[in-house]
Image 1 (cartoon, rainbow, N blue to C red):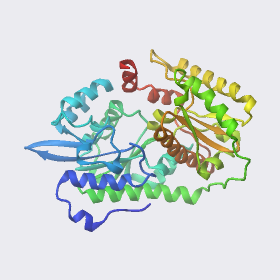
Image 2: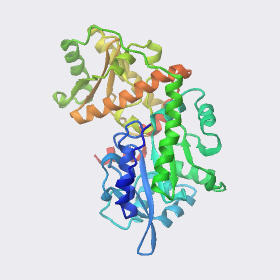
Image 3: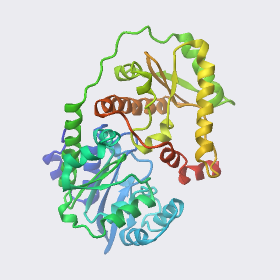
Length: 399
């Protein structure tokens, strides 16, 4: 894993926030660490005599973030929130907003409290592909414990938001942070931290690199075989069928794009048992991809039947776990055509491109996981919790 730190560039940086921007962009340059809004970073600073946490704001990408992309929040307010026994994520967001010193700044990350708890100036958080891939295997925790030993704190999977911050707060109240180099959130990602921006960044590259080296040494990716390809008529028929469900009032607005990367074809040529393991790599991806893809045989006469089966299964998934939420559109966001590759659906090229990017990282993870005992991601119940998060549901109800 490449370290992008440049002493000459860093020497010209004089403020805490500018240094935070610099190392955030270094993390954002590597899509094996973060992609499309994933991950978050923070720096603790002092403004007019008050301790402030500058944390990545919602809607910003680390690769391109600017100083105004960080939300300035009163540190003591966040630490007091961590002590509360219960707090809905909706109330958490409201309280974080009230604690900001600049009302024009973006909403703070939902993991702002977690950043505040960690008692170091610079905190980095990524969804490192290799680490999460290993975590999403049957023996993932044991492998990571062997790799890292007591250098890191291991946190069992908890959904992002207040309950994750609270879990970390309770787990770490009595630890000696001076002996800890990082924190592994199972099925989620990695935190590193230091009073030095460079050290926090270096630790991220080192710890994520250990997982990446292990994964590359222990696993191999198959090469795709030649295939007949997807015909224009098949693609047109499939897109029309998807569009009628995804956007019945304006089906012509739905685009479908075939993933051009060989990784997608290699994955589509795996056994059906492997294809059925397809799920998210890290929880935040579910908002883009849904919990599972549509798996197609490639037979045009079966498109309607296969799509109907997907919609029925999605409705069953919703009915099984719902507690009064509003059901999302049941149409798939991407499909795998057995033997051929994958394609994504959306209303804009950007939306489709993001899904395809996520797919490539996920397909590689699932294929590599086969050499480590198979892919074992979050359960459907845990995925539902993320897909139907109260913050996302609130947006639907307002609409």
